[in-house]
Structures are given as C-alpha cells and as structure tokens.
Image (cartoon, rainbow over the protein chains, first blue to last red):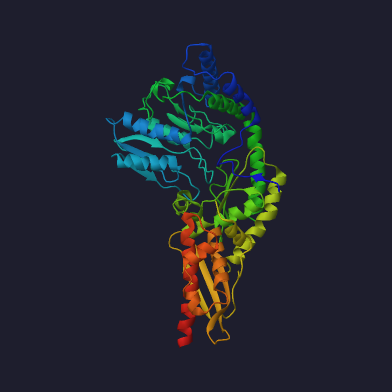
Amino acid sequence: MKRIYMDHAATTQTDPEVVKAMEPCFTKKFGNASSLHQFGVEAKEALEESREKIAKLINAKPSEIIFTSCGSESNNLALKGIMYANKKKGNHIITSRIEHHAIIETCKYLEKQGFTVTYLPVDKYGMVDPGAVEKAITNDTVLVSIMHANNEIGTIEPIEEIGKLCREKKVYFHTDAVQTVGKIPVDVKKLNVDLLSSSAHKLYGPKGVGFLYKKEGINLVPLIHGGGHEAGFRSGTENVAGIVGFAKACELAEKRMDKEITHLRKLSKKLVDGVLKIENSYLNGHPEKRLPGTNNFRFDFIEGESLILRLDMKGIAASTGSACSTKSLEPSHVLTAIGLKHVQAHGSLRLSLGKDNTEAQVDYLLGVLPNIVKELRKMSPLAGK
Amino acid sequence: MQYSKKVVEHFRNPHNMGEIKNPDGIGKVGNPICGDVMWIYIKVGKNKKGQEIVKDIKFKTFGCAAAIATSSMTTDLAKGKTLDEAMKLTRDDVKNALEGLPPIKIHCSNLAADGLHKAIEDYRKKSKK
C-alpha cells in the first residue's frame, strides 16, 4: 500500500541534502567545538558558518542566534529567561489561549513561581487582536509572547503590528515561529520581535536542534548552566551535526520558499475545495491568513481518532485535535479557543501538506475521505438527528 | 496508538453496528470523560428454558477506535446471553475479550458495559408497565 504523509506540521522528512551535509560531522569533523586542536577548530568553523546561514534566513546577526535542542527549549528559555532576568522590572506576561503547550505550560509553571499571566482570547479564526494586547499591557508587564502561526489551524498572527506596539510600550516581544521559519518569510526586524523560537525538524531539518533568536543587548537567565557555550546563554557541547543540518535546511528553504508557497497554496486550495464538498464539513482557522500547507477541518457527528486511524488504514497520515487523541482526554485548547464546542472539536482533522505532496496524492485523499466520513457517520448516533 | 490486534479487527469491521427498529430496550450513554456517545439497542426473546435472552443487539457509537471496538465486542458478548447473564458483564470482560486496552482508553470499556446494562434496564422498566 502506498503511504502518503500529510502531517508536516508535526514533523517533516529530513531532506537528503541535509543528511548529506550532516554526515561528515559524525565521521570526520566530529570534534568538540570548544577544543583547541584541529578537530575542534573544524567543528567550530562548521558551527559558526551554520550560525551565519541561519541568521541570514531571518535577517538577524549571527551573534543573535542561540542554539538549543528543540522549539520547546527555545520557548522555555525565552519565557523563563526573560522573566527571571527582569524580576525588578515586573512580573506580568501576556500571551494567547492558542499558543503551543511549550508556551502555555511554561506560563502555568511561571504562575506557580509567582508571576502573573494574561491569556488573551482569539476570534473565531484564531486571530489575536493587537488592540487587546495593547489594553492588557500594564506597568508590570515584562513580556508579550504571541505565536507567529498556529500549529493546529495555521492562522498567521499580526506579529508586525503587535511587535510595533510592544516597542512603543517598551515591553519585550517574543514569537514562537516554529511553524513559520523556512515556510513563509520571517524577518526579525520587520516583525519587530526581540525573541523568536524555531526548530529544525519542521523545515526538513533534523530533530533535536532549535534556536532562539535574541536581539542584541537583551539579557536572559540561562536554563542550562555549565561551560558557558552559546555566549553563556545555553551551556552544553554544541550539536554540530544537527546545527549543520539546520543551516542546510535554512539554505534550502530560502532557495525554495517562493516556489514551495505557490505549490502548497495550489494543493491546499484543491484539498479545501474538495473536502468542503462533504456535507456538514467546515474549515477551521483563517480562510486566507493561513500557512500555505496547513488545513484544519471538522466534520459533524464523527470523532477524529477514528477518522485518523481509518485514514491510516488507507495509507494517509494526518492528525486531529479530538479529546480521544490527547493524553489529557481534553479536546484541543486551540479548537475550543476559536469557539468550537467539545463535540465539534471531536471531529477535527488536520491535513498539513509539504513540499513532496502531489496533486495525485490530494486526489487520492479526496477519493477515500468522503467514504470514511460516510461510514463513520453511519455508525454515529448523532448523525441524521 | 498501540491497540491490540483484536481492537483493530473490531474497529475495522465492527459487529452488530446499526440500529434496531422498534427495539425492546435502548441504552443511551455519554462519556463524561472524553465526550463519546454510545447507543445500544436490544431485542429480547426467550431460550428453550423460557428465560429472557438478548435475542438481537446493535450499537451506534460516536467515538474513537476503542469506543467502537468496545461497543462491537460488548454486543458480541451479550448476544444470546440471558438478561441476567448480560447484566453481569463487566468492563473487564469487555477489555479482556479485546486482549486489553491502552490505559488511557479503559474508560471506553466502561461506557459499553454501561450502555448494555442501561438497555436491559430500559426493557425491564418498560415490560413492567
């Protein structure tokens, strides 16, 4: 059976060129970038070259990139780091209700440590209102953290505008750009951000490496203390192979971006048009201000985990925000924040497309999905009532 | 999700799925934990000894693979049993017949057994009138 991957918002296949770029770092250039000998110098060179390439993709200086192990670590470092470093300035954070767990859970932890957090609501498309951010800022506010684009529904937030008002109000602004770096243009200057998180495996890079962009001059308390790597902000021997892979992925993303956006928009349009022909189906998220490949639907009367497993039986990999699919047995906080009832969130399906998906694959999906929905509805006591 | 072969089998091809026209009893249950909904329909008959049995049973379920598989297995286990025997079916019977469930899905087996018991209670309530 053919297997079709439509879960690129979860992770992506490492590009063969990335793997090729990483290979020598395991075998020949395996040195510790802190060592003084030739092996160390080679590793250090590879590390700094990578830092330059990555910085270039987001219009930052190389010295503004702190390498981490993943997007979650970057988010933790941004939030905890800035709040602990600015205890004298205040103790208030503003974020949204649709952030990734790596932000929400970090905020909850910080609340337990005595910080206060405002979780801003979003509209039915998942949009944060910049006016609401402005209103929420108090003399006590240190940091605003709003994601660049949502991982479940793909809605792209008005980061530039929020960033501008944060500058005016003199509060730090962080954005979780894990879903956007390498996918759509990300320019830290244009976006007016002080801190930005990214992760390699979302853009055809390897797992286990991320970065935090930190604007020059901003201080952070590190999460990991040790040998003072990454200018003291993140100790631990650098994952040179991963970082080299990340840089290659950024280089490829920069080269391919325009073409890929066009490709994904076209595929997504076909997909959305086709899926919405199914009765009682809806698109979640913003109809236009959405990531080119991320499409989230909901189907009345059926449950998402059943849907995913039936699709998996047909070789299609997708994901859902249904309560049945989560460890907490709570429906996705993103879907409830955009106003969906528990029962509606139950029937959600995310199809996130990537560069290697084809029209033929979308056609195949559109061929099998209506039947699966029909079969599950036949089973459902809620259908036809 | 790591489901047993038996669960996958019942999820792929659920047994006794659908509804019974003019059922003798219906058990409608909702899961307060995850939001799943299950309806069990029964038709009651008699065996040679004259005892009341579950002559026919069908289900409709809005829920995950575990919810569907437990519904299917419950109907299999109950079919042909006397009402008294069927009332004694527990969630563990359902779970064991399915060769286990992931820990987070145990609550699904509760729902199916509850649905069956409610359908029988519904029948008994109606037949008293």
